[in-house]
Amino acid sequence: QKEVEQDPGPLSVPEGAIVSLNCTYSNSAFQYFMWYRQYSRKGPELLMYTYSSGNKEDGRFTAQVDKSSKYISLFIRDSQPSDSATYLCAMITRGAAGNNRKLIWGLGTSLAVNP
Amino acid sequence: GAVVSQHPSWVICKSGTSVKIECRSLDFQATTMFWYRQFPKQSLMLMATSNEGSKATYEQGVEKDKFLINHASLTLSTLTVTSAHPEDSSFYICSAQRTGPYNEQFFGPGTRLTVL
Image (tube, rainbow over all chains, first blue to last red):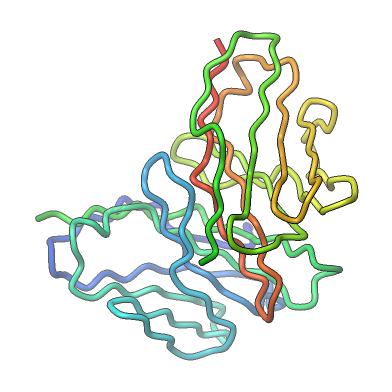
């Protein structure tokens, strides 16, 4: 079993739809959770960073963490064609040795928002 | 803030030559940088962790003599692919870790390497 599971999709939605992206994980030591967006042939861009259970909102994006279920979500409201990209979840344990903290990545979900 | 650049953005080279890729944190200092490679439609694969002033830590299966990493300053890390072969063709991405409460990683735009 992988430490982080993420459905690669592809996910196709009409413009304006609410998008729900999810990851599950098995390592209860993960304490920090991130969502990155990656456009084709570009480096990932950090969208959201959370460290506690609950919701965190930033504009049209809401990140949700449920540590009891080991489940994280990213919601995109009023989705736009410009949101079409691959969304990767990543997580990390707390208190990793030294300053080096390896991110554990999901496979990424490919999202297409159709006009 | 938190901008990371990579140079070059793409490179084509002949088999057997060496290629150097630079990763710079433009507006913050990074004691730690990471190098990843990514194949089409696959997730990021961590190759090595680069620490300023010390030797890099390589992931299992990554040849340290083939992928030379130098982190000479708090804003620059380089990855040199030595004696490149077609199987080294990939998308190479660096990230720089910003020191702080959460030690976020910020990524460069990536370098596409094609070895003929």
